[in-house]
Length: 333
Length: 248
Image (cartoon, rainbow over all chains, first blue to last red; front, side, top):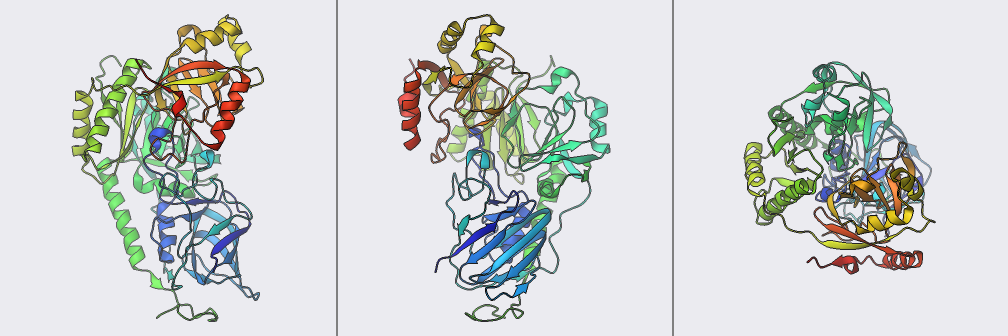
């Protein structure tokens, strides 16, 4: 049997992402990958996939999908509404954070999202890795299906599976709230002292300009020591670096950002908080808080442990609310 | 800034560090970066420093990316050791002779540059083609080389208003730097002409970019038919070998 899923209506900015493309930054290739690796891992865990498998990232509005595959589970993670229409016309409303079962001929329609959502399909997407990764990087046409955002009529092959099974969570995985934690630097010394203070005391608002490359912030402008400090010899950056051009408005660099930058970088968001950036939208208010590296590592370890425990706490999905035609190997409890 | 000692170690969050060798845009400083990267690669290739994920050489600095949960104090002392012992470990990169076509049908700024620099367009092309440039870093987009330094008499600032669309393969200059656009993109540099050889090969997992930090580039002017012949032949299969020359 042919296993595939076809996009029958495009969403907005949907792309295939895995854990990222490492080892090629020296060639100018950004790492890309899941903007929220925790949520994406949750989606994979719910359908029994390895956590770093490619998933469909949905930052704004989800697509409509037509499934032509052996019966298997699908999971969505995030704030999104799901409508499932079976071949014989039955309409159901599966919930995110719980795997649901799809059969050949099913249509799944997804709503707009609040923050970024992820879709994972049991068995995983059958894709060819480009430079060790299936992550889509649109500008250089790398990864995904043809290196582009997902579009109507795209057909994504699925890997075969043996037994349809899925898991469900009692509660969604929750990120920390509160200020985004940052390590000062690498060029904090190129800013006026009162701007360094402003940066961690005044709130900022997410502007209309945000995407996987970066998030421009509105708020009180930050001042460089002198006009000449606004331009530096370009050096390496990392997702989460906050650069400040001459205008004084900070930009948080995203997972698709270029590999080097020529503006002073006032601070860098800690690894544990990077995934939170995936859910920031125009108008959201954020604050920054200075943090120490040692504490950032402790937080990162705690967060990984929290994800591990969340996955361990998943329960086998009860399929009883589904009609049980075709085969009965699912729902083994 | 007078008393600063180099190399200087700057934290870039909890999982990266930038080692700055100086503040200027010079070949000497960039060679110091290459020397450091060479020594670092030697250690990594012999199995040391497994906590390092990757590294990015820039004009006057190198950024090292590592697993945040490693022993960072150990890593930093290793990097300090390598950064101080390697000043002379500069190995020459590859030397390329790249074709460049100044055909007026390509989007270009030759007239504006000539007027600003008070030099006639033919002299401008000749002077540019005589320059041998060093690749300082790859960045901005995959495969985009920052090459320098341009002779001061050809130095011209970025355009005051960037173009929203610069065609791929355009060769451009700004300040002391020369670049080549691998993809269509926005851009504020002054366009000279086009170079027909692709700068990025996604199927080459070992060396996906034509140019690497430390390489040298000289130029060979070509006609439009020659440009088209090279451009079309590279479409079916990317082959960089014909453009590499042996350095004396």
